[in-house]
Amino acid sequence: MSVQQFAAQAMAAIQRGDAAGALGLLRQAEAAAPLDAELKMQRALVHRMTGALPQAIEALDEALAIEPYNFLALLSKGAVLERLSGERVASRIYRNALELAPADDKLAPHLKAPVARAREVVERVDAELEAFLRDRLGPLERAGGELAVNRIDEAIGVYSGRRKIYNQQPLLLHYPRLPALPFYPREMFPWLAELEAATDVIREELEGLLSGRLEEFAPYIAFPPGAPVNQWAELNHSRRWSSMFLWKDGERQDAVCASCPRTAQLLESLPMARQEGFAPVAMFSALEPHTHIPAHTGSTNVRLLTHLPLILPGPARFRVGNDMRNWRMGEAWVFDDTIEHEAWNDADDMRVILIFDVWNPYLEPGERELVQSLMVARNDFYA
Picture 1 (cartoon, one colour):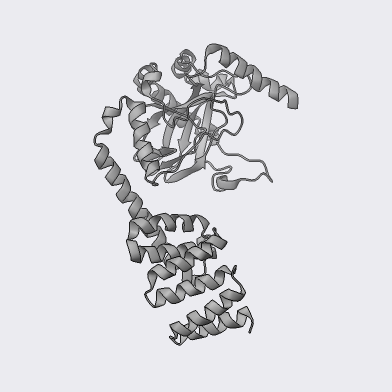
Picture 2 (spheres, helix red, strand yellow):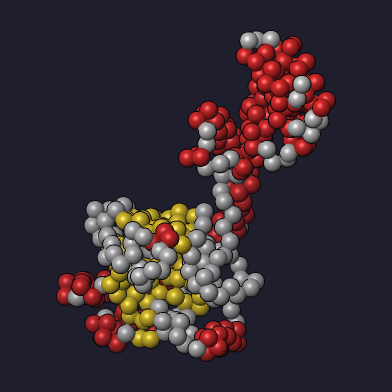
């Protein structure tokens, strides 16, 4: 009798409740095909049905020794361990299984419930671990300043499995050895207070543009025909996210600056990044009600972006990496846009912020000059 015939008879024995007969047939099949992981998984199933859980684990481990990335064997082992030793032990195996699981729309119907259970257990254990770690560590403020507190806070989330690791992913230039900080500490930018104090002045000039030149706010996302739009399909050529530039790719937009003279004068006094053909970029960014800017990354980590809210008709959120913040009037921030970020306007009216780029403060003056030359040289090469 072939291995397939032994296996088929074993399954028939299982279905009629003859566990001993099924095990005997499976052992004969395994003797003929010792490296067949499927046979060992069938043996594990018989042991599970009879309540012989340690023997089921043994059989599944034999299957995994042959096929270490067998999703079904890992999922089954997690389920058996949950019954034997509880959720915390099972969660580690479930996590490995979930990393190998097919997409939900490709899962066989009979696997949807076990996969959902695996996710539920992993999420619950991760939450319990994070709570345990936070309780054990106590107040995080004793770590030091803002940067240190943010680091240990994120480390707890990553260590417990509840937060992802976000790295810099620049679309153009990655400058090595610069720290990957989602939001930079305020103390690194002493001019932020001056910017925030000018909020009313800037908003007054913005409102003049909105009342008289709103049609000049152009869609921020504008791919040419035929270009892959990926996550931008909904916003491509849409006025749901629009902008008006004061500086664009290093060129001062004189007509707009003339309409906002005090804003332009203030920006001129700040350490905006200056790179021929690239920066500075400064703009008013308008987001229509209930609009989401999907996750994306910026061009280079040699400069950072500054946000100053000017019109906030209601709740509006912004995420960089693992950090989620709400915009508040009178509060600006500086962040690294080469780390994945996204924004939401949850309000019923339009949200507008001022955005401009500044040099990364970790660059020395000589580096700034060389970086500018580096980027211009690359453009010249391809020209």
